[in-house]
Image (cartoon, rainbow, N blue to C red):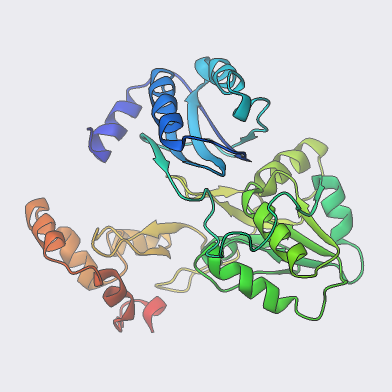
Length: 337
């Protein structure tokens, strides 16, 4: 198996462009492991790179494909009843999105933390096109809800949206329900990255008495493409957070956040170079250079150690290391004060 650095070197040598895309579908898959194994063999042959989850409830995929193989990839999807005529969301910006192919079998393609049967996933909200979503945004008393995590909405979101201060989707559902308490008759607009979380969120809200639930079809990714094609100013501001090497796609020039270390206007995320920490935080170019892509002086010291020493430290760390890093007071970084 190639290391991350070896994967990147291999990509640099590629003489062809790639297309980044994502898709999902809630559909019954009888044997997820067998499906996973077949997809891995077939998609490896097509040069696919990405992160894909397969479960009995469906598939959730973010990946890139050599442009020359894109049509063959779509034909491969269409060859299976479960994935035929799959709606695709193409990346807003290209770049090094994925460096290897990973396909995992999961219990759920989106974990909600709720007991089975808590709601009917087929009873979802009304799908709105980007144009319909824009018009609904302008209606009086419409409630707009971001069902993503706080680090996603921090760098980009729709105007007037409520975005819960949560780290996971399973935390978002009760937080959104609490925010909307007493507003069961109001018009609710939901949005997320590509639409997959809205499917569960809208079904959850409908099961809990909300009568007028709508969701942005294709999510922020499709919205960005459509508004550009229509030549209209988007109501989404800033960057769309994506779960790949790019981290964010620029939708508008608006910068909604600040560097966690110096407070300068910035919306560029960094994963702390200290692998034990790996904290995701906002870091401007000046601080990135000054801190060597690290969140604290402590992490910068660890990251400067020889690789063998870093590996031995990681092996000796207890499982709660990450939590311990987060809980420490670190004067060099305003994020931890």
